[in-house]
Length: 378
Length: 95
Image (cartoon, rainbow over all chains, first blue to last red; front, side, top):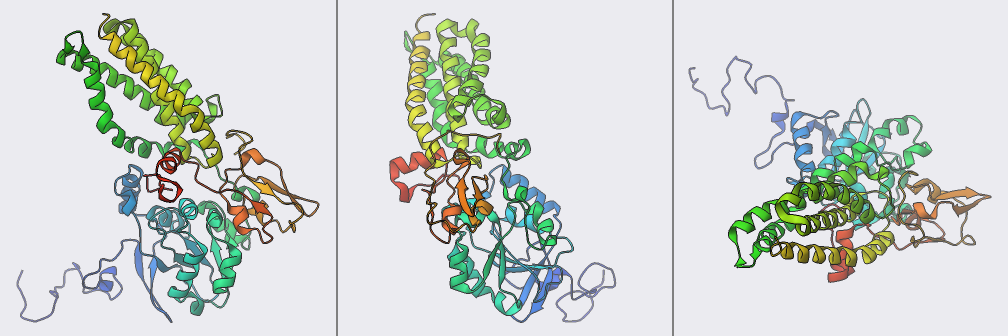
């Protein structure tokens, strides 16, 4: 390849390698110090400046981001800049859809907007989804009005309506928004998958679009985060298990710490499997209303297996200790899952915890005592 | 969601039927169909379905609804016991 003698910033070769073709490749929008978001197709020139025009389909990088986020990798940083975006060919009549700046939320919305022309007003919810942000107060009336004013949307549309996701009603008061920025709030459906039908039906939602669901698939995607969040417990729980397992007639036995410790570790994993995997997955089919009760049942199921398998190695007392331990872990973790469901009330969770936690703590201490005794009675 | 039930008789949801103007906002916003408009007044038809999210009370034009809203999350509640309600968080960046 010969270099031509010119002072152009880019080589002007004839190969279709780059640059030469168009002013409308995404690259041409890049600016020093900025990176172009991969979900931006191009920019719409408007009365209030350049508005990013976003893709209505997801690409590999979006899917990879979703998977990592679901595994709690970079979840708290998975956000986009708040402000105004658009899809299709929006004009002064186009609807304004308001959403959160959690990238997962934004992706779910934009992929439903194929062939729809709309403005998308993204709020700064600190990268948190609509419902949780509304509960926390970042998806609020004040934030809606702040973004309405700073985006200049009022000069782009002739109407005065905003479509908000229904679940943001926990944080947003339509009356306040109307009073503070003059826009009328239209409550959209709960799920982005219904947004097209909602718009087609003249911005009305069928009753079913207004209800939350908690299907098997919706529960399963939550499980990885439940497990990854356990690392804060495992850091001290695992060493503690090995140390307790080593207590013996000779004060401490390293070989026993190892052999009994590994078996106790299996019991811990069984408890995690029962409480943080089986309970969420089988939630509606496990008897009981309180989650700690559901977790106790799945815990017993796995605990009996642990007991049967370990009896030969740790004796009856030890095996009983493991049954009790597995059950307690499962019960506690199942109770923790309340925070991930869309139907448990805080009053209910508090009531359950006040009853269940002393019991769970007592049971763990009982398991602990049995486990130590088992080191002496073999 | 009728197939998912949680503890009964715990919700702090209260409706003042005298103050209610029957606008139907609560019926529309409740994600669990707790309300129904009958005879131009809202009625609580499924109090045990309430998860205390507060959407209804937050948007009731006549302040006829009261509920102590909050997050039904065990980690959050443990933290609120230890650190107080203002400093509590789920520790999961989620809610």
